[in-house]
Image (cartoon, rainbow, N blue to C red; front, side):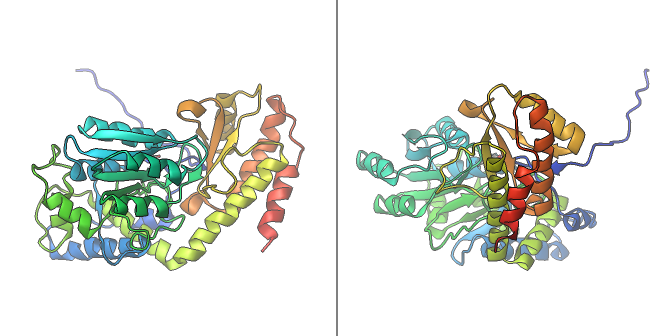
Length: 395
Ligand SMILES: Cc1ncc(COP(=O)(O)O)c(C=O)c1O
C-alpha cells in the first residue's frame, strides 16, 4: 500500500485586514489550550454561564436569553429564521447588500413568503420604504435587517425598523455578524427579538460560533409554533434548553471554541464597550483619511460608514487580484475583494477587533503607496501615511 507523507502545517502569519476572519488575540489562543472536558460536567458550567452573561453585557440586554450556536455566522441567521418562521409566514427583509440578499434566500428556502424592500448598495435603507411595504400586508411574522452590511461597509440604523415591526406585531430579527464587539448594539433599547453574530470578527476569536440573543417574545413564538422547525440541529428552543437551567443534551458543543469565546469576551469587557467602539471609529477614520490622501474613493455613504469595513473603489486599470496578491506576498496583509455587484470594483479593508490597530493601518497604507504606482496608479508617496498619522494624532 502506498505510504503518503503529509507535511506539518506551516502557514504564514498574516495581518488580517480582510472582512474576516480577523487576527485572533494571543490570550484566546492560550485559552484554547485548556483541557477539553465533558459539556455535562459541573466544572464546565461556569464557561457556559460566563459566556451567556458576558454576551448579555455586549448585546446590552437584561431581558433576552444569550448563548452561542455551534456554527458560523450564516447558521446563526439561518437558525433564527428557521426557528421563528413557519412555512407560509410573511417575512419582510431589507435588501441593501450581499448579506441581505442571502438572508432573503435563506428565508425563501425555509418556505416563508419573503418580501424584500430594496435599497441601493452602499447606502442605508430608507425607513419610509419599509413603512410603505409593511402597509401592504395584513399579517407580517418577521421584519429582518442586516446591521453591518459587510459587502458595502454600511451601518444600518435599526430603531425605526424595530418600531415599525412592533406596530405590525411582527418579530424583529437582526444579523450582527460584523458589528458585535465593534460598534454599539442595544438589544433591549432597540427592541430586537433575535440577533446573531460570529466569533471571527470583532470578538477576535476563530470562526465557528454564532453568539446570539433571543427575546422573551421570540422564545414564546418558538414555543407556540404549530409544528417544530424542519431543522433539528438549529432548533433554538432545544439549544436554549442546554444553555438554560437543565443542561439537556442536544449536541456536543465545540469545547475549545467555547473557551476561545469566553476569553474573547473577557478581553472585550476589560477594554470596555465604549472605548472599544471609539478605537474602531478612530482607526477607521484614520484609514479613510489615508486612502483619500492617496486619491482613492471610499464608496460608502459618508453618514453611515461602518468602522469595521472600509470599501474603496479600485482605480481604473489597476488589477484587483494582483494588488491583493502582492499585499499578501510582500507585506503579509490580507484584504478582501468585492462581493456580488461590487465584485472586481472595490476592495474591502477590515479593521476589526485586535486587527483594528494604528500599526496595521499605517503598514497597509505604506504598502499601497509602494504597490499602486507600480500597478499604474500614481499615488503621492507618503501622503497616505501622513494623513492617517495626522488623523490618529487628532484627539
Ligand atoms: C453581515 C454578515 N452576515 C453573515 C455572514 C456569514 O457569516 P459566516 O461566514 O461566519 O457564516 C457574514 C460573513 O462575513 C457577514 O459579514
